Length: 304
Image 1 (tube, rainbow, N blue to C red):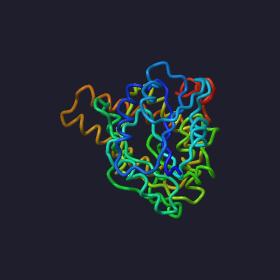
Image 2 (cartoon, helix red, strand yellow; image 1 turned 60 degrees about the vertical axis):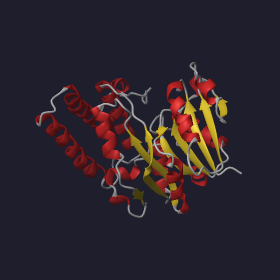
Image 3 (cartoon, rainbow, N blue to C red; image 1 turned 90 degrees about the vertical axis):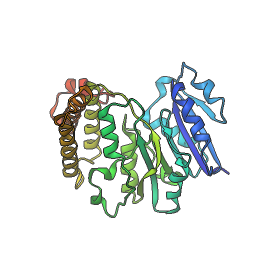
């Protein structure tokens, strides 16, 4: 019998997997678990590294990869009662990462849990600020009975470091009409079905990316489009809380520049914040834009 299935989607992730896999297999108080990797056409040493560990490897063509569909494929292969979704570049930062995630499922009303994301060394100031704003020290219980308590954070969820009860995944599944941000899609389905989602800061990973200013504008355009399409943008409390917290974050960035931190990273953080805000605004108002403009603004080709 398998209690937990850890699911990795991999492609050319050799460098990060050299840290991810040892961190996973060195967890304390490990339940009966399996690790399944679905690889979509790696050409580096990814497969060789995976074979150094007790990992079940499934391979699909690169062109078959789809953020939602491939996660559903991986989950369908799993035997565990809890499904752990871990990005190939998300490195568990604690020997009790898994234990802290799983303990939340002692409450039968909990459908999913997601953990903290910490910036990797060398991460940009903008990404440090963004991760600090969304992944704080405080545990959050998102209860469908009280959706207004957490504002825009109510539907926030990241499957870079997350767990979903198998029976809940079977009921909801990742929505395959989501080309990207499938984690937002399944979070809404889980909450709307009446299950709680827990943010567990004691289950951290190191996970951050480098984005250019233009890439951030396009990424947040896609986020805005997704928020609008899933009707999250129009949910009670979303806009006001996002504007409130966004204003606080922007003022903090400006204060850092004014008080002497006028170096390149500080100026870049302000510029990138403005680009994100513009992208989000354009995304939630994409219905007013011509298709040619939307195709140019989308990072993930959601209007192709």
